[in-house]
Amino acid sequence: MAPQDSKTRQLEIIQNAVGPAPWYWKTFPSVTGTSRQALEWTFHGNDGDLAYLVTLALAQEPDTPRLALNTYCRPFLIPSGKLGIWCPEPNELRVLCFDPNQLAAFPFTEIAGWFKRSNDRLYATTAPLAEIELSSKLQPGMQKIEIPEPFRDLDELLLISSYAAKTKDEPAAAILVLYPHAGLVEVLPQKWFTASRFEVGPQWISRVARDPATHRIVGEGVRIGTFELTDDGCDIANWIEKQ
Image 1 (tube, helix red, strand yellow):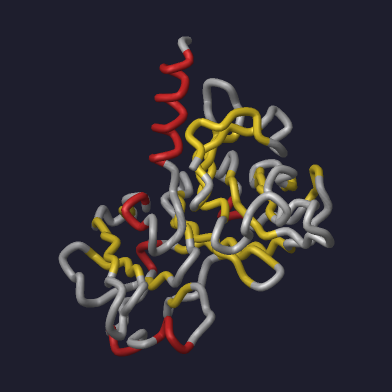
Image 2 (image 1 turned 45 degrees about the horizontal axis):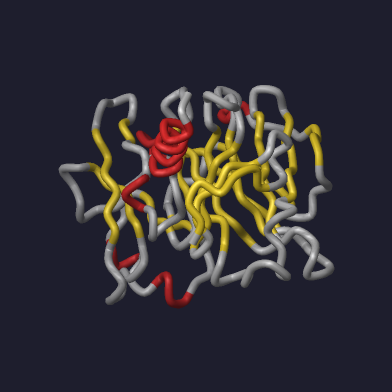
């Protein structure tokens, strides 16, 4: 395959990858429950009591949301028809599973001003079916973990975590590759993303995906550019477009 064709393919993969709320809300997957009722995502803008929130509601009932996402949440689909959400918390990542058909509606008054006064990543009046907590201090490499049954239909889930760097030359972020069907998680410290090379905070890794042609991870960073990682998933193999 010609280099230009490879670049085009990689950029398309990255552009279709889900990014965090609210900046990438248009990349969120379409949600349809087993009842065949379509649900739609709505971004509520940068001002007002619903500022920065992204909500999920039935298409015919947009004013009665069933789920609200704060910043940095990423939704994903589970083959069994369930809806997954993953989000960063202090010192960990949370991965949650919901049944779209069981999500109860609530009024906007319950979440008015919620972003401004809460550090909670998501709001729902229905409890998740299952949840996984992954420490941001996991050691590099493959590790065995307990995976609740609702997640086991997933082959792979790529997550992005901060990493406890002790010096400016140590990785400040890691990609966690979750293999729910196998009960494994692989921790890939990003050796290239250090405080000595980047302004950690204003610059950050926003979304990643697997290139099915090469099996390498490709991704995008805010104020960084787009990239392809090495075979081990820990360093830059190629800058697709650098800012």
